[in-house]
Image 1 (tube, rainbow over the protein chains, first blue to last red):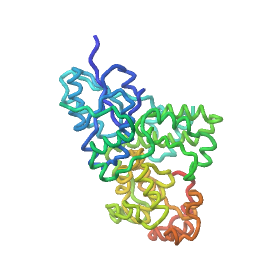
Image 2 (spheres, rainbow over the protein chains, first blue to last red):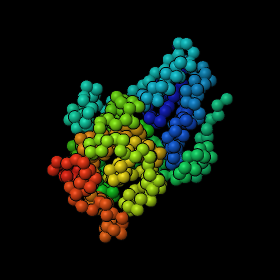
Image 3 (tube, each protein chain N blue to C red):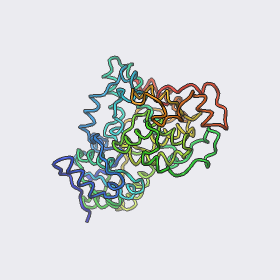
Length: 143
Length: 280
């Protein structure tokens, strides 16, 4: 049984070949400009233009406002119970994921997809200084 | 009902006009638009044009060196780190010659990993300052002459203008500017990092904040600083001449002399006076 899916694209992965697009190439996709974030961080016009140009090359709908609300609304419009998105280290992304799933109908899923890692096994490396990380992963990075 | 934003633009000018209208506060704060174009097509063109081997390694620290300028595309994931690495390794004359470039990609991966561990604490000092000054002695706000690019120090003001107008700075300019803000003007790194994030096309809290902390010494064993000789060595001929004519007096001297002026409360060991080689 096919399940209706949408993709939520965010600013840490604007790659047309990202894992969500590979997983569900025909799914409707959305990007939402985070109005609160733009003002809080006083993001300049040149950054907005650059990102917008990246968005124009993706098969997506572009909206603005409250990110979680807009994503939930978009899912509702497409009667989707499954949302795919890309991983991000940003705490705000994690907060948005939690908010979105809280407001989705019961039984909905939000899947955070990872891209292949730059190097494997680095989770065990001491990150106190770059030199320690690099010494541990260099061989693999150059493979 | 949510309104979709426009996707049909006949030209870049039309797109910019639309965005000026949609985001008036951003346009009012700083009206500049970068010549660097966003998007996968532009990213791939840049990927093909970049140099990855010995030419990159030899010239990358110079302001007019063969740097890739791929960072804005990598920051938004338009290009994945792995695909850039594969491209670099297969396009250097010999694979091992791309090591310096791949090492730079490693910095990006490293900073992302540290960010994942720190979360919002990426805005806190990871360690104490090692400058002989307590954290509270650093100003919280960025002085207006820095924000406006009117410090009277030519190479600094030029870098600020470039930052504001293009959203891009060569890594050496980032380090000079950051060290100027933190060590010469004693402003906390957070104020500088926030300001960079307003403007840099590749601005991202991981690489940006941790690099500022590296300069400040809150994420390294010693502060980063430099002298005029270092600036002259890497900026071509643009600042040759009498330092006074460029407002460069505060940077004249050996590393030891500069360190004594900037950090009078501490004694840096001899190795600290050696100029750092290139990036970090």
